[in-house]
Amino acid sequence: MLVFRRVIMPVAWLLVFAVIGIALIKLAFFPSGEESAELGGGEVPTGEITDPQVSAWRDTVRNDLELAATIQNDPAVDVTVGKPGNVVDVFFGVGDTVAAGDIIASVREDIPTEDGGTYAVWSEVIASASGTISSLSLVSGAAVAPADKVGAIAPSTFRVQGTIAPADRYRLTTEPTEAQVQITGGPAPFTCTGLMLETPLPGSEQGESGGTGEITTTVRCPVPADVRVFPGLAATMTIAGGLAEDVVVLPITAVLGTSGEGTVFVPGPDGPEPRAVTLGLADAEKIEIVDGLEEGEMVYEYVPTSALAGAETGL
Image (tube, rainbow, N blue to C red):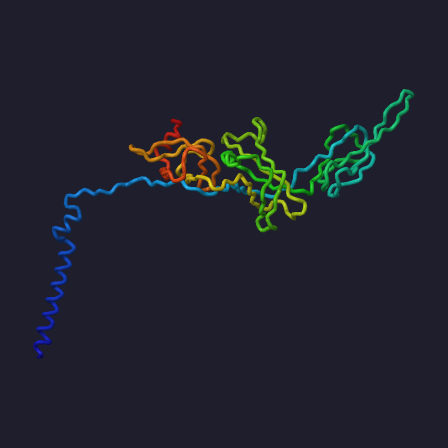
């Protein structure tokens, strides 16, 4: 019994482990003929790499344009002289608050008469806007002439102002008149009306692009009087560019073009075939197909690289 435990059993276990090791080596390095055939014994793979396709479907496209903006003071308004003469009295100074129509100063002009005398003609320097007088050069006894700029009034009103890139103008199918404004860390969103888009004219100081060729459009609208704001606050302006419901759409990656006329690529016997389509509204992911493609038709999900190269070179 002692010989069996000390000699025979250890030798038996060694033989078992040896057989297992040999079997593992054979499986790893010497597969059977059937396995070799499956692993490539002369057979050619039949799989193909194909470009993904997608079918046109119906969806809703909301074309909202979001712009980064800031709260700014409205520009200062000049204080100008209407008639010539000498300043007699000045009723306001820098830092004073005035209302539109207030008399800032009185002016007297002495008109000679035929008998050698004079008669006085009085006029006033009027505040043309409400706000705070930020500068004023009027002093009693000073001579003034029509159209002289003698000061400035900083209005107590504000504007929301941002910029829009030229390409984003395509997203606005109509000229917008209002925007939703959300001030960062401020009150609830509000609507500002009287929205204006201003693009600098060629030759103007603002129109000079410094050789970069980039000219942006300024977008601004007045802050309602009942909304408490401060200059320099960051805000987001959201301009509604349109809404298209239950329309045929495709991913924007499937369309060459973003506005007006575009091209999609449908499967053909020899590969992708271009097809002209009419485009509508678009958002960040999909674009409306107004005409040229029916719901359910298949197109290539991505514009072929050859078509992209041709578009870049103008061919």
